[in-house]
Amino acid sequence: MSEKRPMVAVLTGAGISTDSGIPDYRGPQGLWQRDPSAQEMVTIGPYLASTEVRRRSWLMRRDAGAIGAEPNAGHRALADLERAGVPMRVLTQNVDGLHQAAGLPARKVIELHGTATEVQCARCRVVGPMAAALERVAAGEDDPACEQCGGVLRPRTVMFGEALDERVLAQADAVAKACQVFLAVGSSLQVMPAALLPRIALERGAKLIVVNGEPTAYDEAAHEVIREPISEALPKLVRRLVNGDLARA
Ligand code: ZN
Image (cartoon, rainbow, N blue to C red; front, top):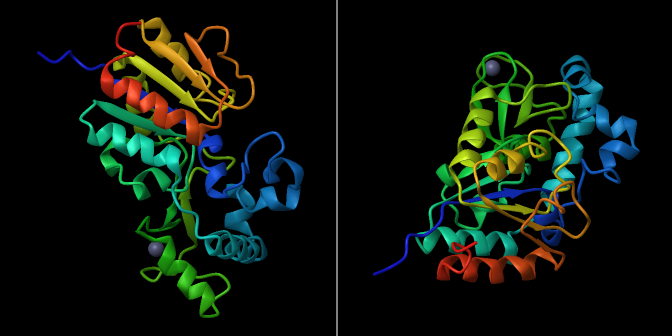
């Protein structure tokens, strides 16, 4: 008779994507903190108000897209966890879509800060693929507008100056309450709501495992802290979860 497998919540931050060549923009050493003119490009007020800010932000996204980031062994390990039939959800602070690109079904991924793989019209709210907008930029449009209504197109991310989506927050809260194992991966766990979710899980008796290169706010409260590189640590952790070794905390 097979053991009941624990429900696993996996919170992921910038650290899981750095091995895919995506810099930690938001972190303390990140571009947004170091360069105020760069931060304008991801702040809702200046973005909506200034054609010049939008032009620069489209060029930035074009250049970022040219990197062609691919999922790494960490992303793939989490997709393997799902394929193995372990009940799980990923709560991600990242907007890069790499969990889905690794094969995780979209319904398993809760994107706390939205996604940079899609654009949305700030006026009529129609959603479209980022790739199509970037094609228009490559073809010479420096500030592609909504093709339905002419409104400003923006990435479907939560920009600075914007609140997180209430429905997304409620989903994340429910997952933190329901899980038996909570993995916190590649996040300093300092930015809301990532700062709160492990606490919610711990209060419901979940086992907390932290995987991060640097110390986090939860290292003392965690049952296990792993400092190995994420793309090495996650495949091993996933094997333990699939075998049920982490159910018996
Ligand atoms: Zn529109």
